[in-house]
Image (cartoon, rainbow, N blue to C red; front, side, top):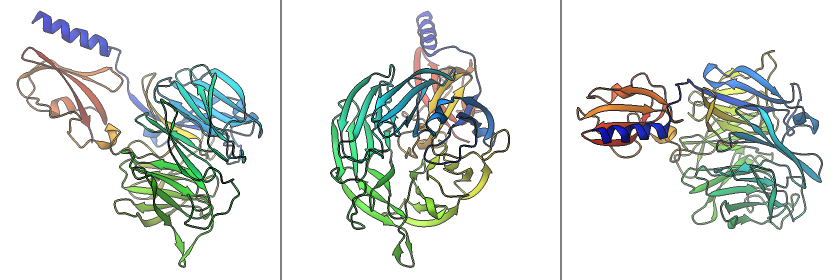
Length: 457
């Protein structure tokens, strides 16, 4: 028994015994957005409380955000507890910086030749992938790899004209980056291309017939499902999006929105999967609307349109729980009802808008989760999305009378509940716990059992 007690104590020590803290979910919005005005607020970023109807919490001033007209990218890293900002100073050089999200202090900032668009960070926090920029129209554009810890430039990979957006898949294995008429799929560890879709030899302004090119005139913002079976990207010269079959490495569908039976010749800038992957939403930017598609059928079918306040850069993002859609405007939309429910404003009542933002979860002062900037599917990758009520994520858990003691840990490793008596009902562990994933340490007949449990209201 003494050996069991020591083993249990050792496990608890490894997990951590920090004091409990309330889980808080925040939206971090940078300002100004170089792709969308107006610059009507203090340069830096604003923080909003998602669980309190997106109420303004505070602003953090970074004058450099406004020095060059705004940011091109604002990408967080959980591993480094940091956010990375990118922008172009001019068409020849760019600026990249790292901010510690636990202190709101600058860690490093450096200028680089020829980069500055929307970057992404490897899951382990070691590499930053920075596109040279959509303004780089020559065919020698590509991906600059930077040491995310120090800012040292490591390597350059040539892809093609106008490298623009990038994201790292939640499993950390791949990075996707789009350019003028191409989509690069790269292994984050080896930095080798898995596949190049489209034609990287076509310049930005090359005109290609509709439905004979990636993106109907070019590739705009993109997304992917959690199984990495399909990638999605919005059309540059038409309202709609394309679907790439990643397994067979080909375009599966051109999905076009029609008006009077004809393709609508205007830009789509933004495509996102709802976290459960049942819907696809796109931004018909100059149509001042979002368009929702049923993704449970193939090809996806248009369901409805949702008006937004104005046009602009165009963006679509969902909160981790799938409850809210956040576009490039101040409209916060209820995903279930498809209605605008909140207007995003600062402490002075000024409308807050932009397309460079992310979601962050804190427990106390500790950062425990961050989103991507993109609306990626998570139905099979994120426990919060994929678990069913009462479901254990790793096999069945038997909470019978044989369980004599139980410790419940939050996702950040803090003890949130201890039950020091026999358990006959799983609800004794779930009762009173907020929505989320929990780790269980169970004491049973001379054994220590570790399980995971999901609590869903």
